[in-house]
Length: 290
Image (tube, rainbow, N blue to C red; front, side, top):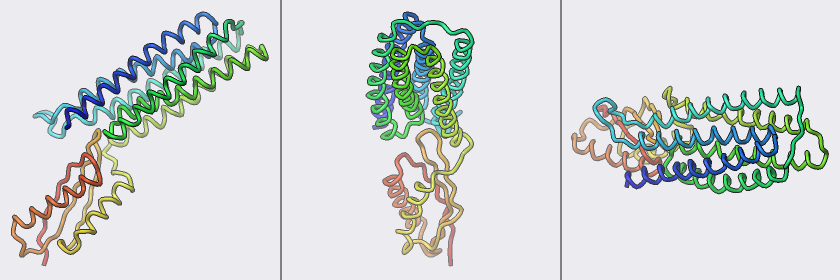
């Protein structure tokens, strides 16, 4: 089952690589033909998306490797490193786009063949809607940070492509060349916001932040269902690496229970936690009560 899931993640990432490569080719063609800095900025954005897609593809392949001697906890955090790198790449692209737009504001030039750019922008938006929805679906099913980051890239690309397309329509109608640079700057600011949230989400598991309140609430509900079998539980610690959720706590049981009986309770708890929280690694420290 795990092999099928890992293969599914890799295939999803590969689809993203192929779609981004195709869209970059179209955008570069339209940008060169029209001389539009907003279209060129979109091509740069898609270029970053392509790098991100390739990083996501490599990371899901590596993260799927089983634990080994050097990595007893597995390779899951490589997906978080992937997301962090992707976020930093977006920041670099955004600064480059702003620089090019400012240069063109100072030295404006005519923009031609806008209709080709308009058509390509809306085709790009449609393709990215389809691919990003597919990536989000797989990311949610497999709890993959790398695919979620890749889907976020493409989702933002949808908004920026539509924005550039609408802007080019306005440029065609008004003939105000300044609109081209202003649109490009708007694209850059939007993807910088995307980059911040992406880096924030990727960084939390790297510094072993606890699981979300919703996830910990599910743990509490499971433990409450065992109140007739245990005395209490305490020292709950949670964290996440890749798509694996690590749960640790101390559990007090009746000292008259045998080791086998205590072990059976622990196994039942682990099974219940796995049902409510996919991909869990549970460590329970048993303590004797009165």
